Length: 353
Image 1: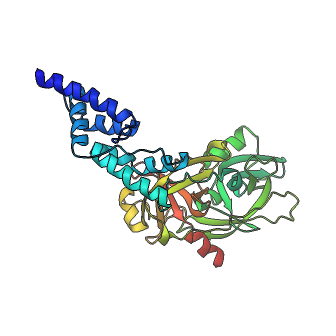
Image 2 (image 1 turned 30 degrees about the vertical axis):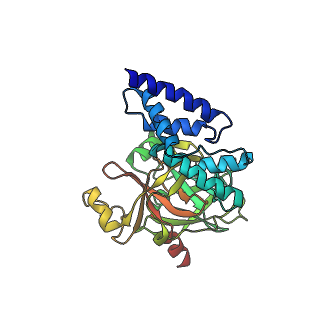
Image 3 (image 1 turned 45 degrees about the horizontal axis):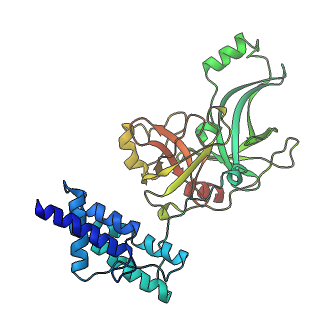
């Protein structure tokens, strides 16, 4: 009992000494935090704190005094030593001493805090396209939309999208609706498929034509001539990211217009990088099978990522943190890691053909 009383007495004695203007210096909040951490597992934390302080002073240590540092120097020194607290009072104080000296002679290195990726959304939206496919009946002067997706402007006249968007076919249900509800004469009316494009949140639609296709990569190129009667703004993406330079864990942003939600944007990180022959295992062999002229080849470069995409996101761009296009969103997998894009390398390959 007498030992506990003595320890508490010493605690107050040294606390008073430390808080004064004596040689032992001042106890900062950081010092108290370090003592608290050092004693976190001790059942009697007050007694432990007194013993830690006592041992610290008896060993000839002095609490670092910040009186000769300016506000910015104090902040930088404390930032450098935040993690040292978990190793106890002595380690934290030694760290302060070391970095105080560095601050005074101007050699302290400021801790670099990772910057949040810049928000390029408003700028990127100008290059994202909403794609809609319609059956156009010139006889009845009517149109019936049957499919939609997303795209991205990659040159002054070209838009990249998925082939399963650009080459989508109207099925029996569409024709049944046109015949029964719209009263179209499917045998005699002048009916053809049209591809319409518009800017995100734009009011004008323009017609586009399929000019290039690579169904084995699910990438198609639509051409829109700005001189057409119906005109949209064509502001292309200028930076393409190389697949070989991508790394797992890096930031990505997906954009598109799923379900008519124009300009839908989501964020995540790259989870996996590989080619078709490897990804096909998660699809039970169906990924590489050709159906309606579509299907990936074994060398298609894929990016599996965590930025959420939905039906209608197909053909929309996948950007990195700097607004560089690195892929085209293509698949949603129930068995793999959800969101899958094909590499932007394949867009450049098709444009160069």
